Image (cartoon, rainbow, N blue to C red; front, side, top):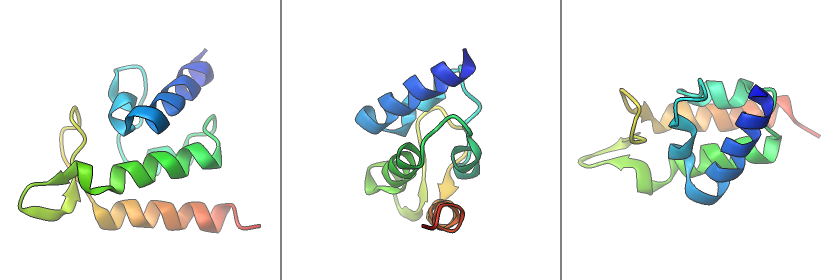
Length: 93
């Protein structure tokens, strides 16, 4: 059941952005949580992290931070880029 919930959340996140992951049904609070989520595909993980890293979620006057509504604290763009690099390392062809 949790895998189905995560997959639906991932599909929604690809369409509507990563804020939909914070609906209270998931524990995806940091970029590393996305990387480690076993039920998400590599494409879903990459799309979620890329959306999260976009300027849409940047903190005003703090361009190195990204804040998704509902998260207690912002994450750094460096943390997001590290998570994307970790995906590359884990899933190299």
